[in-house]
Image 1 (cartoon, rainbow, N blue to C red):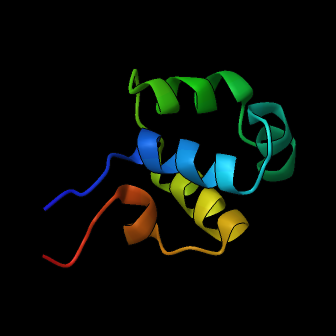
Image 2: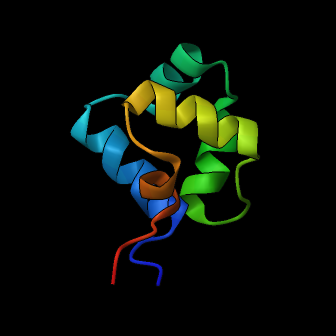
Length: 70
């Protein structure tokens, strides 16, 4: 079951950490336009991008992907 999509989860994490898309881009090496598209649900990140985001936020890939234990 999906609890939250990756774009929603990414925006939530970014807001909790009080960082902009540009700051996240600089910290992870991912492009800011890509981050914006993911948050808007216009595209989905690659596996390597998910890994970079999970490492940055110190969260599991499952959490980032919005998977839950129901």
